[in-house]
Image (cartoon, rainbow, N blue to C red; front, top):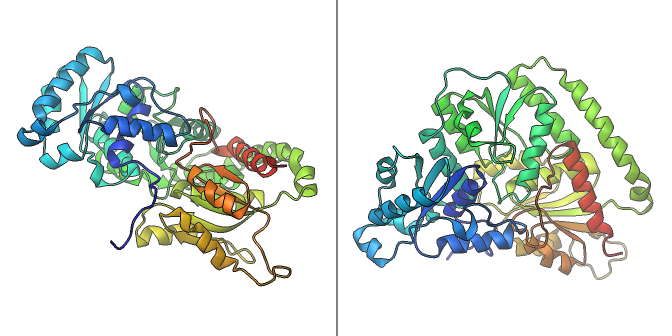
Length: 444
């Protein structure tokens, strides 16, 4: 075996599709898979999504065909038909989405035919999400692409200043609720109508009519791009990509890019200036303590694409910390890696962090030791101190070995409870600063 993934930081594609559907309002996922899949995903959510699991038709209440050996031999469509009939009688929803696991995908059950059988009774979408296809981020793209093709209403007319937000994957981004609300807040300041799909301010009508948007905004360098391409192909909506906009610099870049894409007449610079003034006026309260207590830190970031890029840029551009190493835990191809490396470059003397692509985060210590090798005497040697590790709960062990504080921001997060917190926007940047400095002083 040439390589392996130690302690994966994601679900399978079935899990990603399920968590995406659990976050959609008025939507009922129907799992066509083997016994145990729903339970395994539910407890993985419980252990990694900052205690967010369950809810209406989520967790262990998800309808599932629970196919067994007989269904594998003779086909499981009869079992799915029975399950769909019972689900429609018992579960109250406006959209039902059939998703598949590995077993039913391999035996080739025709879920589209089953969906068509019940199409006169409800809106039903079928998505082939077999877990072996990839990780949970791929599952997000697969199920949303199926919904775009089978459910979203075709519209010839576009609604002026209307945009859809993609790339923030529910539950895999444990701050998804707060982040989606944060991006809506900043885009509304320049006069946009923002469709985020998954928050308590959204409805299923927003998804059904999402073809009316003038622009799709993908807040990721990797996730959500396939979904945006599907919108472009089926509904003619162009898209732009942007780094997760954490803090004033990234937000300003996003607002300018959106304004250019939509040819807005809004004075975006004035909006940015007003928000910057509020941001730095609030940050002023920390200035004396930050300088007197020497709260600047070296940072080691170990995270998924969205957070690894966004946190590194925020530390470099806004907070003044020094990221020495950023480790990406996603499986990425060469083109994706090159694109990400370019995003983390900085002018001298910093030049940006060392960029590492390794799914096994326990290797972080080895990379750090290569940057700061052990000396016979450390009296005159440059050392990684004071420092902080920013990553997932799995990276707490690395922080303990280094003897430094740790903050969990990237999946899995098992040592924090997150309900409505978010890091996107000007206010989100202040929230992240609070969390970082709280972690830095907590041991005092």
